[in-house]
Image 1 (tube, rainbow, N blue to C red):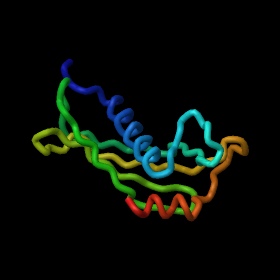
Image 2: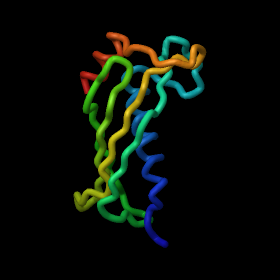
Image 3: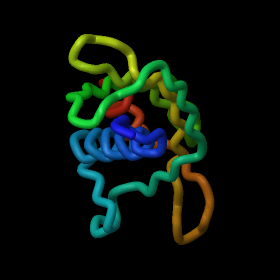
Image 4: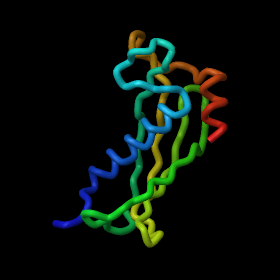
Length: 117
């Protein structure tokens, strides 16, 4: 069809989150570092504003919109080279203890890292 499929945008958002976490607390998806907190995606909301075409260069803008006790929210914009907004999105992430299968409070250290963005 020549345009970016709607599901692909969720992957763009995921890759942006992972890059952010790697940059601020050295997050690793393989869980190799026990000091790195687990994080799960609790909610995603995507508003499609325009189509991106195959081959378009897109910029993903992300910022921390809210930090709670166990969760934090990101807001995103995906724009094309002309500055046109293609997607606006929000996600909610929860710090998570996979062994205990329950949310964890956001540590003071992680909170400071998120607030610095």
